[in-house]
Image 1: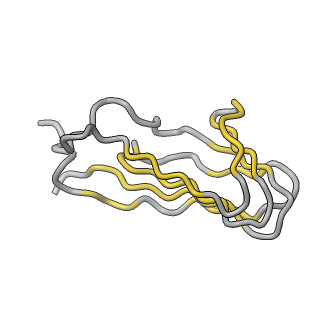
Image 2 (image 1 turned 90 degrees about the vertical axis):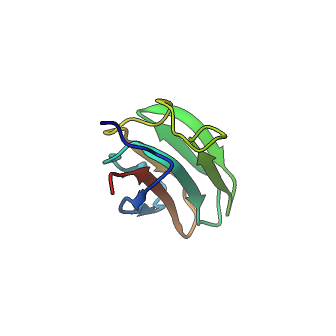
Length: 106
């Protein structure tokens, strides 16, 4: 039986790294996120790469929340994949964080 994604959430370990001016790895994802938060906690812009593709440049202190569930609460098969890896490049003081929830069986 499939997971009813509107019933139970579990938290994955936070992926976080200090910005050093060089690319730092965040990941891999250990579950398929239903809600994911990208948080630039540094005082400079950070370029985020998703599976080695430049995806988004975050301004200082910018955060992005992606709710990957459908409007009615059930998560379709539209999410990041288990094993996806992110790299962040930024030179400012601070860190970059990825936090996410995933669906689990009760």
